[in-house]
Amino acid sequence: MVSAAFSFNALEAFCNYAISRTWRQPVDVKRKKTRETLHHEDAERALSTEEKLKSVLPKIYNVPTPAGKSIWERFIRLMRARDACVHIKYRDQYPMSKVDEESLFYQFLSNDPLEFPRSATAMIEYFFANSGKPRWLLEMPPVGSNYQVNPDAPPGGAPVT
Image 1 (cartoon, one colour):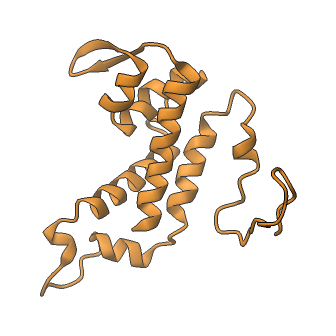
Image 2: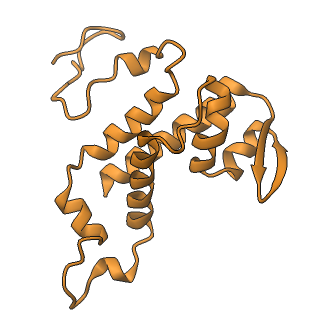
Image 3: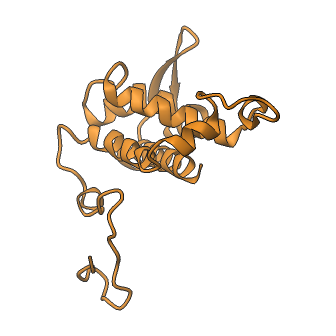
């Protein structure tokens, strides 16, 4: 559950950073069959993470929308898992009933918990296909590694692996 929630939060933070720090322009979006222009700070609050990833970030980073691609399917699984653990439904608690292979807890206990952070990382990397990755993304340790930071190293110092 933590893996899904924090992986989704990472994507949400990335979206909001891109909109308000990188873009800093009005955001044109199509919502409910009408076009709206939102101030970038309003777009952070008003648009879902799904809308940001599908419609806004592709304009910012000059890439095609990820919707319809395999990366999008991974995001949808992450979003559903996050939504299911944040808004736990009765059916996912399965009191006195057989285990449902579609249930939240079955999915969490039967799948690799590292898939969610890998999906979030892959989505972020998707937006840098036409440009160089930022240093924070290049230097990020691989998901699931035993990477450790030396607490005594000076800022920018060599990490301990």
